[in-house]
Each structure stands twice: as C-alpha cells, then as structure tokens.
Image 1: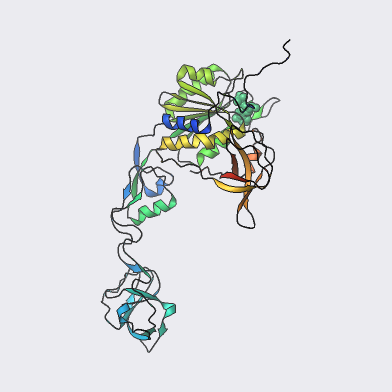
Image 2: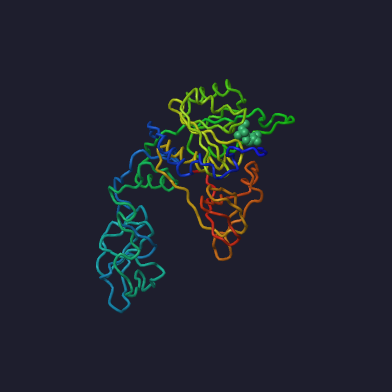
Length: 422
Ligand code: AMP
Ligand code: MG
C-alpha cells in the first residue's frame, strides 16, 4: 500500500537535477543580453556612472611641463659643493601660474612654490625646511640633494597618446577629474538603459492604502527602486499588477514598448496564481530556471521583442539576492559596461551556519574589523527569504559556495559587501 506522497523537487530540495548553477545562469544571461548601441555626448559632470563609448587617449602630457612638488628653492645640483655647505643667491620667485621668466645660473637659486614651473637652469627643488637663511638675499644648503628631487616631471601622470579611460569603463569621480585634467569638457557615453519594473500579487497593497486582512504591503517595488536608483538607468515603475492573465499580458506589452529590461517580482513559482509564465509564452521567448541558490531559486529569463525580461521571485529577500547576482550583471551588459565580477573578501565567521552542499547560499551578515584589523562577520539573525529586516540590518552577503557543507565559528567565509551603486 502506498502511504507516502512522492513530491516533485520543491524550493527546499537542493538536489533537483533540473536546477542550473549560478555560473550557468550568468553565462546564459551574458549570451543573451546585447548592449545598447545609441550614444550621447554630455558635459563631463553628467557622465558620472555612465559607460564610456570609446577609449579616451590623452591629447597631451599631464602635467604638461615639469613643476615643483614642494615649496622651497629651485637649484642646479651642480652648484652644490661636495660634502660642504653652499651659499646661493636668491634671484627671484616662481609662483604656481606665474613662472620665473629669467634663467638661473651657477651659484644662484629661485624661491619656488608648489605647482610652479621649474625655472630654466635648475634641476632640483630643495624643501624650504632643509634650507637655512644666510646673509640677506642668500640661502645655505648642504650637499645631500639629487637631480630631480621634488620635481614632478612632464607626463609623469599621463603621457600624450596614453589611454586614460577604456571603452566600456563606468565613469568614476576620479575619471571626471582625469578628463578635466586633459581639458576635455564633454564625453561620448552610451545611453542609459531603461528599466521597467512591477510587482505581482492580489495580496499586495501600496503604501498609503489601508491594510485589510489577508493583504500585505508591497515592499519589493521600493527595494527595487532603491537598488535601481544607485545605477545609471532610467526607471519606469509600473506599479502592482493583479494575478490574472489579461493584466499580465497588458503590462508586459506596455513595458516592452519602452524598456530595455523588464523586471517583475512574484508569480514565477508553480502556484495557481502564477501568470508570468503563460503570459510570457504568448508574447515572447522564455526560459524558466531553477537556480541552485538560496534564496532565489525560481527565476524567469526571456525576451519580448527587443526587451529582456527577468522575473524575480516574490519573497523580498530573494528579490534582493537575485537582483544583486543576476540583474546587476544584466544591467552592466545592457549598458555596454565591461564585466565587473563581484568583489569578495575573506572574513572569520562568528556564527555557526548550517548549509547543504549543491547550491550557493547568500546569508545576510554584518561585517566588521576585529582587533587584528581582519574582517569578521556575524549573521543577522533569522534568515528566512521573507525576513527583509535581515537585509536592512546587514551590510554584506555571506557567500557560501556550492561545495560548502556548513560553517563553524572561526571558519573563513567569503563576504560580498552591499554596493547598489555600480
Ligand atoms: P509568489 O512568488 O508570488 O508566490 O510570492 C512569494 C511570497 O512573496 C508570497 O508570500 C508573497 O506574498 C510575497 N511577495 C510577493 N510579492 C511581494 C511584494 N511585492 N512585497 C512583499 N511581499 C511579496
Ligand atoms: Mg504571487
């Protein structure tokens, strides 16, 4: 007699043979996503976080001419007597922006300020702290100085023709400074990808509406909005979509006319109210993935016309995990940015963590420095995929790879700091 119901592998089963690995999922995303082609030329201040279109080569040396790295005296090292104190005539001053326009001869020196051009006839700058005042108009220096001392050479930062910013680089504040140092006021960058998103679920109400029994507030649209706001994308919030086929069809059609990437949350499992799958099958091409990660196992990936579609799970923590692992790289690829693998750090675990092999797990952690300046990490309490405060209290994911079989306090683990701005 059969007295047991055999289950198809569910979310809790890590050994589901139909699951694909995190790396496979990333490969598939990489193969499918095509970068936006259009570009725009913008003032460099507006280029922060944007993707550079063509390698920028320097039109000249930076600095353009040798200048002083210190306040002091420009001298010719050949003027210094060996193993003795030399007295030099102070013949003038070189200021940053107002060069000394004479030439400095043997036995002479020029008072010089940081950033001032190195006067003709000199080859070293002696810091003013290493100089004694001699008779009026004279200084005294010892012999301990070498050619090139305290001089910033022409081209020491950038040489003419050097590539200073690669194609596909995301522009950082330092890049904007480098562009300005080259005298470049504008740059050609890729256009921003347009990202549309919506939540699905009949149980969802938006903030500001009363909460009736059986309803919950929609949090995913807010965490998604927060994560997207840190990225150089144009955001379209399509609201909450009811669990029925018509609404799903309608929102997907509308989204595909305006977005490069459409993100939904919820409705991707095998529940009776999960309509993402049938709607997508009608409108585009789809792949339904069970990914061997926790949380965030079910994920839908597909395309409607030219738009990429990513259907994230409904559970709020799973949304943030799948966003960080799959949506971020997809947005980079769409934006035409060079891949940026996540930065992982080693940290000493403070807590015991149970873990089954065969899947990646992303626990939420609080990392801090210990007394030896090494990273240590504690878990943020309960780790259920609906416990969103486990994310808000955390500053990192504790990344436990496929083969990890559990963690004891004191073990080394990998951590990935939250960074929603890349
Ligand atoms: P689903 O994948 O639609 O079955 O959703 C899985 C779980 O996540 C359910 O408990 C939902 O109520 C919850 N959930 C789905 N969408 C949201 C949302 N936008 N905000 C908060 N919880 C959600
Ligand atoms: Mg649902």
